[in-house]
Length: 486
Image (cartoon, rainbow, N blue to C red; front, top):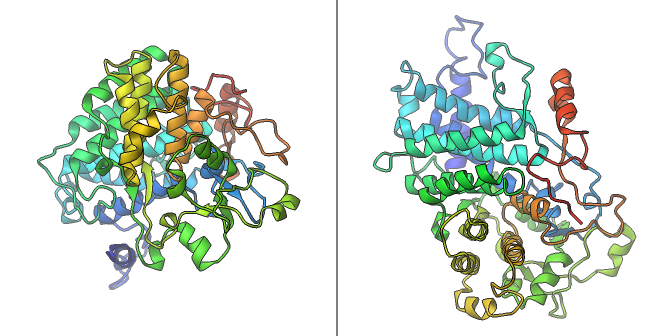
Protein backbone atom coordinates (compact mmCIF):
# COMPACT_ATOMS: atom_id res chain seq x y z
CA UNK A 1 0.00 0.00 0.00
CA UNK A 2 2.47 2.60 -1.18
CA UNK A 3 0.00 4.62 -3.19
CA UNK A 4 0.21 7.71 -0.95
CA UNK A 5 3.88 8.10 -1.91
CA UNK A 6 2.96 7.37 -5.52
CA UNK A 7 0.32 10.07 -5.45
CA UNK A 8 2.73 12.63 -4.00
CA UNK A 9 5.26 11.86 -6.72
CA UNK A 10 2.59 11.92 -9.39
CA UNK A 11 1.22 15.24 -8.22
CA UNK A 12 4.70 16.71 -8.25
CA UNK A 13 5.21 15.46 -11.76
CA UNK A 14 1.84 16.77 -12.82
CA UNK A 15 2.61 20.21 -11.47
CA UNK A 16 6.01 20.41 -13.12
CA UNK A 17 5.07 18.80 -16.43
CA UNK A 18 3.31 21.88 -17.77
CA UNK A 19 6.36 24.04 -17.06
CA UNK A 20 8.81 21.85 -19.02
CA UNK A 21 9.54 21.99 -22.73
CA UNK A 22 10.49 24.99 -24.82
CA UNK A 23 9.29 27.62 -22.30
CA UNK A 24 7.11 29.00 -25.09
CA UNK A 25 4.41 30.32 -22.78
CA UNK A 26 5.68 32.13 -19.73
CA UNK A 27 2.09 32.77 -18.58
CA UNK A 28 1.48 29.10 -17.70
CA UNK A 29 1.18 28.64 -13.94
CA UNK A 30 3.14 25.48 -13.01
CA UNK A 31 1.17 25.19 -9.75
CA UNK A 32 -2.20 25.17 -11.55
CA UNK A 33 -1.86 22.35 -14.13
CA UNK A 34 -4.20 22.42 -17.08
CA UNK A 35 -4.88 18.67 -16.78
CA UNK A 36 -5.44 17.86 -13.10
CA UNK A 37 -5.82 14.13 -12.44
CA UNK A 38 -9.11 13.59 -10.66
CA UNK A 39 -7.75 10.44 -9.02
CA UNK A 40 -5.07 12.37 -7.16
CA UNK A 41 -7.38 15.24 -6.30
CA UNK A 42 -9.89 12.83 -4.80
CA UNK A 43 -7.37 10.93 -2.70
CA UNK A 44 -6.01 14.16 -1.27
CA UNK A 45 -9.52 15.37 -0.41
CA UNK A 46 -10.23 12.06 1.36
CA UNK A 47 -7.24 12.63 3.62
CA UNK A 48 -9.19 15.31 5.50
CA UNK A 49 -11.44 12.73 7.14
CA UNK A 50 -9.33 11.80 10.21
CA UNK A 51 -9.09 15.47 11.17
CA UNK A 52 -12.65 15.24 12.45
CA UNK A 53 -11.54 12.59 14.91
CA UNK A 54 -8.29 14.23 15.93
CA UNK A 55 -6.58 17.34 14.59
CA UNK A 56 -3.10 15.96 15.16
CA UNK A 57 -1.35 15.91 18.53
CA UNK A 58 -0.42 19.56 18.88
CA UNK A 59 -3.88 20.56 20.07
CA UNK A 60 -6.27 17.61 19.64
CA UNK A 61 -9.17 19.79 20.67
CA UNK A 62 -11.85 17.57 19.21
CA UNK A 63 -10.81 14.82 21.64
CA UNK A 64 -10.30 17.33 24.47
CA UNK A 65 -13.68 19.09 24.26
CA UNK A 66 -15.70 15.87 24.88
CA UNK A 67 -13.08 15.04 27.56
CA UNK A 68 -11.90 11.83 25.95
CA UNK A 69 -8.29 13.04 26.28
CA UNK A 70 -6.55 14.78 29.11
CA UNK A 71 -3.11 16.38 29.20
CA UNK A 72 -0.63 14.44 31.28
CA UNK A 73 2.57 16.38 30.71
CA UNK A 74 2.06 20.04 29.80
CA UNK A 75 -1.33 21.59 30.52
CA UNK A 76 -1.89 23.98 27.61
CA UNK A 77 -5.17 23.35 25.84
CA UNK A 78 -7.66 21.85 28.30
CA UNK A 79 -8.22 25.34 29.69
CA UNK A 80 -9.53 26.47 26.27
CA UNK A 81 -6.85 29.10 25.76
CA UNK A 82 -6.92 28.56 22.00
CA UNK A 83 -10.39 28.51 20.53
CA UNK A 84 -10.10 29.76 16.94
CA UNK A 85 -10.60 27.40 14.02
CA UNK A 86 -8.72 27.71 10.75
CA UNK A 87 -11.21 27.12 7.94
CA UNK A 88 -8.72 27.98 5.19
CA UNK A 89 -7.19 24.55 4.50
CA UNK A 90 -10.63 22.95 4.28
CA UNK A 91 -11.54 25.39 1.52
CA UNK A 92 -8.41 25.65 -0.58
CA UNK A 93 -7.09 22.12 -0.12
CA UNK A 94 -10.10 19.82 0.20
CA UNK A 95 -13.28 21.52 -0.98
CA UNK A 96 -11.54 23.07 -3.96
CA UNK A 97 -10.35 19.62 -5.05
CA UNK A 98 -13.88 18.22 -4.81
CA UNK A 99 -15.37 21.16 -6.71
CA UNK A 100 -12.73 20.74 -9.42
CA UNK A 101 -13.61 17.07 -9.87
CA UNK A 102 -17.32 17.94 -10.10
CA UNK A 103 -16.60 20.69 -12.62
CA UNK A 104 -14.41 18.46 -14.80
CA UNK A 105 -17.09 15.78 -14.87
CA UNK A 106 -19.87 18.27 -15.55
CA UNK A 107 -18.12 20.08 -18.42
CA UNK A 108 -18.69 18.13 -21.64
CA UNK A 109 -15.35 19.33 -22.99
CA UNK A 110 -13.43 17.58 -20.19
CA UNK A 111 -15.76 14.86 -18.90
CA UNK A 112 -14.42 12.19 -21.25
CA UNK A 113 -10.75 13.04 -20.97
CA UNK A 114 -8.48 10.28 -19.66
CA UNK A 115 -7.30 12.37 -16.71
CA UNK A 116 -10.95 12.58 -15.60
CA UNK A 117 -12.51 9.19 -16.38
CA UNK A 118 -9.77 7.15 -14.73
CA UNK A 119 -11.29 7.85 -11.29
CA UNK A 120 -14.56 6.18 -12.28
CA UNK A 121 -17.96 6.72 -13.81
CA UNK A 122 -19.02 10.34 -14.10
CA UNK A 123 -22.08 10.11 -11.85
CA UNK A 124 -20.26 8.23 -9.12
CA UNK A 125 -17.41 10.73 -9.11
CA UNK A 126 -19.83 13.63 -8.77
CA UNK A 127 -21.99 11.91 -6.15
CA UNK A 128 -19.02 10.86 -4.01
CA UNK A 129 -17.56 14.37 -4.18
CA UNK A 130 -20.89 15.94 -3.24
CA UNK A 131 -21.22 13.53 -0.31
CA UNK A 132 -17.72 14.17 1.01
CA UNK A 133 -18.12 17.91 0.43
CA UNK A 134 -21.31 17.98 2.51
CA UNK A 135 -19.66 15.91 5.23
CA UNK A 136 -16.85 18.48 5.44
CA UNK A 137 -19.21 21.46 5.42
CA UNK A 138 -21.33 19.90 8.17
CA UNK A 139 -18.33 19.77 10.47
CA UNK A 140 -17.15 23.26 9.55
CA UNK A 141 -20.49 24.89 10.28
CA UNK A 142 -20.99 22.85 13.45
CA UNK A 143 -17.71 24.28 14.75
CA UNK A 144 -18.19 28.00 13.96
CA UNK A 145 -21.77 28.48 12.75
CA UNK A 146 -22.13 30.90 9.82
CA UNK A 147 -19.49 30.60 7.11
CA UNK A 148 -18.88 31.27 3.40
CA UNK A 149 -20.88 28.70 1.46
CA UNK A 150 -22.82 29.83 -1.62
CA UNK A 151 -20.09 32.32 -2.59
CA UNK A 152 -17.11 30.26 -1.40
CA UNK A 153 -14.31 29.15 -3.72
CA UNK A 154 -15.20 31.61 -6.48
CA UNK A 155 -11.90 33.44 -6.63
CA UNK A 156 -11.45 32.35 -10.26
CA UNK A 157 -14.62 34.32 -10.98
CA UNK A 158 -13.23 37.38 -9.23
CA UNK A 159 -15.24 36.93 -6.03
CA UNK A 160 -12.73 37.31 -3.20
CA UNK A 161 -15.02 38.48 -0.40
CA UNK A 162 -17.76 35.86 -0.02
CA UNK A 163 -20.73 36.43 2.23
CA UNK A 164 -21.31 34.24 5.27
CA UNK A 165 -24.44 32.10 4.95
CA UNK A 166 -26.57 31.23 7.95
CA UNK A 167 -26.24 27.76 9.41
CA UNK A 168 -29.96 27.26 8.87
CA UNK A 169 -29.55 27.80 5.13
CA UNK A 170 -26.39 25.66 4.98
CA UNK A 171 -28.15 22.77 6.71
CA UNK A 172 -31.10 22.98 4.34
CA UNK A 173 -28.87 23.10 1.28
CA UNK A 174 -26.61 20.28 2.47
CA UNK A 175 -29.65 18.03 2.88
CA UNK A 176 -30.82 18.95 -0.63
CA UNK A 177 -27.38 18.36 -2.15
CA UNK A 178 -26.94 15.05 -0.36
CA UNK A 179 -30.39 13.83 -1.40
CA UNK A 180 -29.60 14.61 -5.03
CA UNK A 181 -26.21 12.94 -4.75
CA UNK A 182 -27.78 9.82 -3.25
CA UNK A 183 -30.00 9.45 -6.33
CA UNK A 184 -26.99 10.07 -8.56
CA UNK A 185 -24.97 7.11 -7.28
CA UNK A 186 -24.91 4.11 -9.62
CA UNK A 187 -24.04 0.84 -7.88
CA UNK A 188 -23.52 -0.84 -11.26
CA UNK A 189 -20.89 1.77 -12.09
CA UNK A 190 -17.36 2.24 -10.84
CA UNK A 191 -15.15 4.35 -8.62
CA UNK A 192 -11.44 3.53 -8.59
CA UNK A 193 -10.76 1.19 -5.67
CA UNK A 194 -7.17 2.35 -5.21
CA UNK A 195 -7.66 6.10 -5.21
CA UNK A 196 -10.87 5.92 -3.19
CA UNK A 197 -8.99 5.38 0.07
CA UNK A 198 -12.16 5.50 2.19
CA UNK A 199 -14.42 2.83 0.70
CA UNK A 200 -12.27 1.25 -2.03
CA UNK A 201 -14.84 2.03 -4.71
CA UNK A 202 -17.77 0.44 -2.85
CA UNK A 203 -20.72 2.56 -4.00
CA UNK A 204 -23.21 0.91 -1.63
CA UNK A 205 -21.13 2.10 1.32
CA UNK A 206 -20.82 5.60 -0.10
CA UNK A 207 -24.61 5.69 -0.24
CA UNK A 208 -24.80 4.65 3.41
CA UNK A 209 -22.39 7.42 4.36
CA UNK A 210 -24.59 9.82 2.41
CA UNK A 211 -27.77 8.79 4.24
CA UNK A 212 -25.95 8.69 7.58
CA UNK A 213 -24.69 12.25 7.09
CA UNK A 214 -28.25 13.40 6.44
CA UNK A 215 -29.32 11.72 9.69
CA UNK A 216 -26.52 13.48 11.59
CA UNK A 217 -27.69 16.79 10.14
CA UNK A 218 -31.38 16.15 10.79
CA UNK A 219 -31.14 15.00 14.41
CA UNK A 220 -29.51 18.29 15.38
CA UNK A 221 -32.74 20.07 14.47
CA UNK A 222 -34.59 18.41 17.37
CA UNK A 223 -34.86 21.66 19.34
CA UNK A 224 -34.65 24.38 16.71
CA UNK A 225 -36.81 22.95 13.89
CA UNK A 226 -38.24 19.51 14.76
CA UNK A 227 -40.70 19.47 11.84
CA UNK A 228 -37.92 19.85 9.25
CA UNK A 229 -35.71 17.48 11.22
CA UNK A 230 -38.37 14.78 11.23
CA UNK A 231 -39.06 15.04 7.49
CA UNK A 232 -35.39 14.99 6.54
CA UNK A 233 -34.55 12.21 8.97
CA UNK A 234 -37.37 9.97 7.78
CA UNK A 235 -36.19 10.25 4.17
CA UNK A 236 -32.57 9.51 5.08
CA UNK A 237 -33.62 6.59 7.27
CA UNK A 238 -35.67 5.13 4.42
CA UNK A 239 -32.63 5.41 2.15
CA UNK A 240 -30.58 3.41 4.66
CA UNK A 241 -27.54 4.37 6.71
CA UNK A 242 -24.70 2.40 8.26
CA UNK A 243 -25.75 -0.84 9.95
CA UNK A 244 -22.65 -3.04 9.86
CA UNK A 245 -19.15 -2.34 11.09
CA UNK A 246 -18.06 -2.97 7.51
CA UNK A 247 -19.86 0.28 6.64
CA UNK A 248 -17.92 2.50 9.03
CA UNK A 249 -16.05 5.53 7.80
CA UNK A 250 -12.44 4.78 8.66
CA UNK A 251 -9.13 6.24 7.63
CA UNK A 252 -6.40 3.67 7.14
CA UNK A 253 -2.93 4.89 8.05
CA UNK A 254 0.07 3.12 6.54
CA UNK A 255 3.17 1.49 8.06
CA UNK A 256 5.38 4.27 6.72
CA UNK A 257 6.42 7.73 7.83
CA UNK A 258 4.62 9.55 5.01
CA UNK A 259 1.19 8.53 6.29
CA UNK A 260 1.43 7.27 9.86
CA UNK A 261 -0.96 7.50 12.77
CA UNK A 262 -0.40 10.80 14.65
CA UNK A 263 -0.50 9.15 18.10
CA UNK A 264 2.24 6.78 16.94
CA UNK A 265 4.36 9.77 16.02
CA UNK A 266 3.68 11.45 19.36
CA UNK A 267 4.09 8.43 21.62
CA UNK A 268 6.60 6.20 19.83
CA UNK A 269 8.61 8.45 17.50
CA UNK A 270 8.75 11.56 19.68
CA UNK A 271 8.39 9.77 23.01
CA UNK A 272 6.31 12.67 24.31
CA UNK A 273 3.21 10.97 25.68
CA UNK A 274 1.40 14.30 25.95
CA UNK A 275 -2.08 12.84 26.31
CA UNK A 276 -3.94 9.99 27.98
CA UNK A 277 -7.56 8.86 28.37
CA UNK A 278 -9.21 11.28 30.78
CA UNK A 279 -10.48 10.45 34.22
CA UNK A 280 -13.90 11.64 32.99
CA UNK A 281 -14.44 8.77 30.59
CA UNK A 282 -12.50 6.14 32.52
CA UNK A 283 -14.59 6.71 35.65
CA UNK A 284 -17.82 6.49 33.65
CA UNK A 285 -16.73 3.21 32.07
CA UNK A 286 -15.85 1.85 35.51
CA UNK A 287 -19.20 2.95 36.95
CA UNK A 288 -21.03 1.08 34.19
CA UNK A 289 -18.88 -2.08 34.40
CA UNK A 290 -18.25 -1.33 30.75
CA UNK A 291 -15.92 -3.87 29.05
CA UNK A 292 -14.77 -1.19 26.61
CA UNK A 293 -12.61 0.10 29.45
CA UNK A 294 -10.01 -2.58 28.74
CA UNK A 295 -9.89 -1.90 25.01
CA UNK A 296 -9.81 1.87 25.30
CA UNK A 297 -7.03 2.05 27.87
CA UNK A 298 -4.20 0.16 29.52
CA UNK A 299 -4.00 0.19 33.34
CA UNK A 300 -1.16 1.72 35.32
CA UNK A 301 1.65 -0.25 36.90
CA UNK A 302 -0.68 -1.37 39.71
CA UNK A 303 -3.31 -2.65 37.29
CA UNK A 304 -5.67 0.23 37.99
CA UNK A 305 -7.47 2.44 35.48
CA UNK A 306 -6.61 5.70 37.19
CA UNK A 307 -7.01 8.70 34.93
CA UNK A 308 -5.62 12.21 35.15
CA UNK A 309 -8.44 14.68 35.93
CA UNK A 310 -9.29 16.91 33.02
CA UNK A 311 -8.02 20.49 33.04
CA UNK A 312 -6.03 20.54 36.27
CA UNK A 313 -3.25 23.02 36.97
CA UNK A 314 0.24 22.32 35.70
CA UNK A 315 1.52 22.06 39.28
CA UNK A 316 -0.87 19.17 39.96
CA UNK A 317 0.43 16.95 37.17
CA UNK A 318 3.16 15.62 39.48
CA UNK A 319 0.41 13.98 41.55
CA UNK A 320 -0.36 11.61 38.68
CA UNK A 321 2.96 10.04 37.69
CA UNK A 322 1.41 6.64 37.03
CA UNK A 323 -1.84 6.90 35.08
CA UNK A 324 -3.77 4.72 32.70
CA UNK A 325 -2.63 5.06 29.09
CA UNK A 326 -4.05 4.47 25.64
CA UNK A 327 -4.45 0.89 24.54
CA UNK A 328 -1.72 0.15 21.95
CA UNK A 329 -4.39 -0.47 19.30
CA UNK A 330 -4.63 3.31 18.94
CA UNK A 331 -0.98 4.15 18.41
CA UNK A 332 0.56 1.63 16.07
CA UNK A 333 2.09 3.21 12.99
CA UNK A 334 -0.76 1.93 10.81
CA UNK A 335 -3.55 2.01 13.40
CA UNK A 336 -6.70 3.06 11.53
CA UNK A 337 -8.80 5.96 12.78
CA UNK A 338 -12.55 5.43 12.84
CA UNK A 339 -14.53 8.59 12.16
CA UNK A 340 -18.18 7.54 11.91
CA UNK A 341 -19.29 4.13 13.13
CA UNK A 342 -22.60 2.32 12.63
CA UNK A 343 -22.98 2.43 16.41
CA UNK A 344 -23.23 6.23 16.23
CA UNK A 345 -25.81 6.09 13.44
CA UNK A 346 -27.92 3.34 15.04
CA UNK A 347 -28.03 5.30 18.29
CA UNK A 348 -29.08 8.43 16.39
CA UNK A 349 -31.87 6.35 14.89
CA UNK A 350 -32.83 5.21 18.39
CA UNK A 351 -33.22 8.84 19.43
CA UNK A 352 -35.30 9.56 16.33
CA UNK A 353 -37.55 6.60 17.18
CA UNK A 354 -38.10 7.88 20.73
CA UNK A 355 -39.04 11.27 19.28
CA UNK A 356 -41.53 9.62 16.92
CA UNK A 357 -39.63 10.68 13.82
CA UNK A 358 -39.44 7.16 12.39
CA UNK A 359 -41.61 4.07 12.80
CA UNK A 360 -39.03 1.82 14.44
CA UNK A 361 -38.34 -0.01 17.70
CA UNK A 362 -36.26 2.44 19.74
CA UNK A 363 -35.10 -0.20 22.22
CA UNK A 364 -33.98 -2.54 19.44
CA UNK A 365 -32.02 0.26 17.80
CA UNK A 366 -30.50 1.22 21.17
CA UNK A 367 -29.28 -2.33 21.76
CA UNK A 368 -28.11 -2.62 18.16
CA UNK A 369 -26.06 0.55 18.61
CA UNK A 370 -24.41 -0.80 21.74
CA UNK A 371 -23.82 -4.16 20.04
CA UNK A 372 -22.18 -2.44 17.07
CA UNK A 373 -19.83 -0.54 19.39
CA UNK A 374 -18.95 -3.72 21.30
CA UNK A 375 -18.52 -5.55 18.00
CA UNK A 376 -15.80 -3.14 16.92
CA UNK A 377 -13.66 -4.55 19.72
CA UNK A 378 -14.70 -8.22 19.75
CA UNK A 379 -16.90 -7.82 22.83
CA UNK A 380 -20.08 -9.21 21.25
CA UNK A 381 -20.69 -11.83 23.94
CA UNK A 382 -20.97 -9.20 26.68
CA UNK A 383 -23.77 -7.09 25.19
CA UNK A 384 -26.73 -8.76 26.91
CA UNK A 385 -25.25 -8.65 30.40
CA UNK A 386 -24.24 -5.03 29.93
CA UNK A 387 -27.68 -3.96 28.72
CA UNK A 388 -29.37 -5.75 31.64
CA UNK A 389 -27.81 -3.37 34.17
CA UNK A 390 -30.36 -0.90 35.61
CA UNK A 391 -28.22 2.08 34.59
CA UNK A 392 -28.12 0.84 30.99
CA UNK A 393 -31.54 -0.81 30.58
CA UNK A 394 -33.85 1.07 28.22
CA UNK A 395 -36.34 2.22 30.83
CA UNK A 396 -37.75 5.49 32.11
CA UNK A 397 -39.38 8.48 30.47
CA UNK A 398 -38.67 9.48 26.88
CA UNK A 399 -36.27 12.14 28.16
CA UNK A 400 -34.43 9.57 30.28
CA UNK A 401 -34.23 7.21 27.32
CA UNK A 402 -32.76 9.96 25.13
CA UNK A 403 -30.20 10.68 27.84
CA UNK A 404 -29.23 6.99 27.96
CA UNK A 405 -28.91 6.95 24.18
CA UNK A 406 -26.74 10.08 24.29
CA UNK A 407 -24.53 8.58 26.98
CA UNK A 408 -23.94 5.50 24.83
CA UNK A 409 -23.09 7.71 21.87
CA UNK A 410 -20.52 9.52 24.02
CA UNK A 411 -19.02 6.28 25.33
CA UNK A 412 -18.93 4.72 21.87
CA UNK A 413 -17.40 7.77 20.19
CA UNK A 414 -14.11 7.60 22.09
CA UNK A 415 -11.31 8.13 19.56
CA UNK A 416 -13.92 8.69 16.85
CA UNK A 417 -15.62 11.84 15.57
CA UNK A 418 -14.98 14.26 18.42
CA UNK A 419 -16.89 17.10 16.74
CA UNK A 420 -20.02 14.95 16.66
CA UNK A 421 -19.48 14.06 20.33
CA UNK A 422 -19.10 17.74 21.21
CA UNK A 423 -22.25 18.53 19.21
CA UNK A 424 -24.15 15.89 21.18
CA UNK A 425 -23.07 17.52 24.43
CA UNK A 426 -24.06 20.98 23.21
CA UNK A 427 -27.51 19.76 22.21
CA UNK A 428 -28.31 17.27 24.98
CA UNK A 429 -25.90 18.10 27.84
CA UNK A 430 -24.87 14.44 28.14
CA UNK A 431 -22.63 13.81 29.90
CA UNK A 432 -22.61 16.86 32.13
CA UNK A 433 -19.13 18.07 31.22
CA UNK A 434 -17.51 20.88 33.19
CA UNK A 435 -14.23 22.75 32.70
CA UNK A 436 -11.30 21.53 34.78
CA UNK A 437 -10.41 22.89 38.18
CA UNK A 438 -7.75 25.23 36.76
CA UNK A 439 -9.98 26.70 34.06
CA UNK A 440 -10.76 30.42 34.04
CA UNK A 441 -13.98 29.87 32.07
CA UNK A 442 -17.35 28.70 33.32
CA UNK A 443 -18.31 26.22 30.62
CA UNK A 444 -16.97 24.07 27.81
CA UNK A 445 -17.00 26.22 24.63
CA UNK A 446 -20.21 26.29 22.61
CA UNK A 447 -18.32 27.13 19.42
CA UNK A 448 -14.85 28.09 18.24
CA UNK A 449 -13.78 31.52 16.99
CA UNK A 450 -13.18 32.43 13.38
CA UNK A 451 -9.50 32.36 12.45
CA UNK A 452 -8.01 35.83 11.80
CA UNK A 453 -6.60 34.86 8.41
CA UNK A 454 -10.09 33.78 7.35
CA UNK A 455 -11.67 37.18 7.88
CA UNK A 456 -8.95 39.85 7.76
CA UNK A 457 -9.44 40.29 4.01
CA UNK A 458 -13.22 39.98 4.28
CA UNK A 459 -14.02 42.16 7.28
CA UNK A 460 -17.41 43.58 6.17
CA UNK A 461 -18.89 40.12 5.62
CA UNK A 462 -17.32 38.87 8.84
CA UNK A 463 -18.86 41.75 10.76
CA UNK A 464 -22.24 41.07 9.17
CA UNK A 465 -21.98 37.45 10.31
CA UNK A 466 -21.23 38.23 13.94
CA UNK A 467 -23.94 40.90 13.96
CA UNK A 468 -26.43 38.21 12.90
CA UNK A 469 -25.06 35.28 14.88
CA UNK A 470 -23.61 36.86 18.00
CA UNK A 471 -20.17 37.84 19.30
CA UNK A 472 -17.22 35.90 17.93
CA UNK A 473 -16.48 33.99 21.11
CA UNK A 474 -17.15 30.62 22.70
CA UNK A 475 -20.23 31.86 24.58
CA UNK A 476 -22.20 32.24 21.35
CA UNK A 477 -24.17 29.19 20.32
CA UNK A 478 -24.56 27.85 16.79
CA UNK A 479 -28.06 27.98 15.31
CA UNK A 480 -29.26 24.51 16.33
CA UNK A 481 -27.88 24.73 19.88
CA UNK A 482 -30.74 26.23 21.87
CA UNK A 483 -30.79 23.93 24.91
CA UNK A 484 -29.18 25.28 28.10
CA UNK A 485 -26.12 23.47 29.41
CA UNK A 486 -26.00 23.29 33.19
